[in-house]
Length: 91
Image (cartoon, rainbow, N blue to C red; front, side):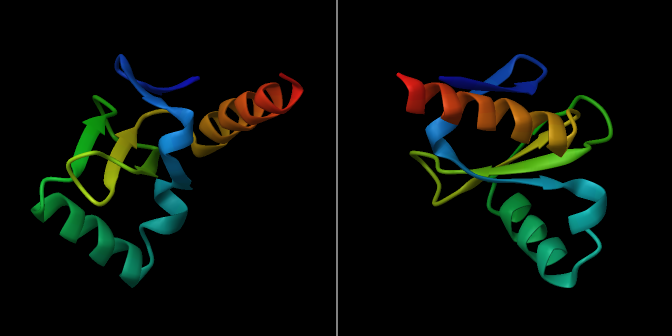
């Protein structure tokens, strides 16, 4: 199943490693460093179109990991992701 990140960007739900709130996480030194290195290596994709509210870390065929910036809240993305996981368990 696909997870909607915003701005017509979707990814397979099984590629998601984690969903993080931009305000809560970007205050940390290690998170800022991780995001800076990801951006320098070309592994950040801005799907927000504006000020991002969350970031999603996922596997990618051409990078070890890729970071998607999204205008959707981390809570909304996590809820959608959990619903998909629950649906898969039922199937």
